[in-house]
Length: 65
Image (cartoon, rainbow, N blue to C red; front, side, top):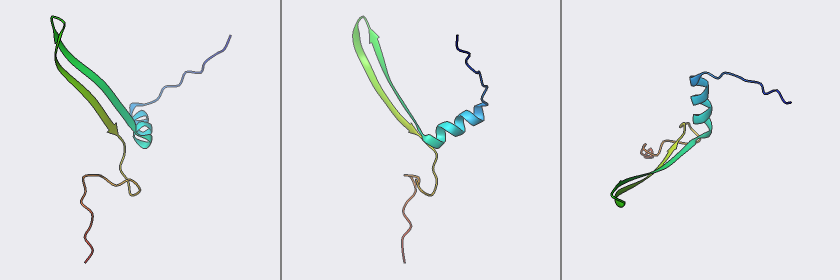
């Protein structure tokens, strides 16, 4: 019989670990009435931290004078 060690991790620590490595979230949502697909939504999201080595895609590059 194997004993598995149980460790509790704080939510802040879990978020820090996830953001450090990045997380990809995917999903599909379909609205269906009477077996007829009316709306289909495909979801894709990448969540990660931003630092000097991985700059934000929303920042404009600095112009050199």
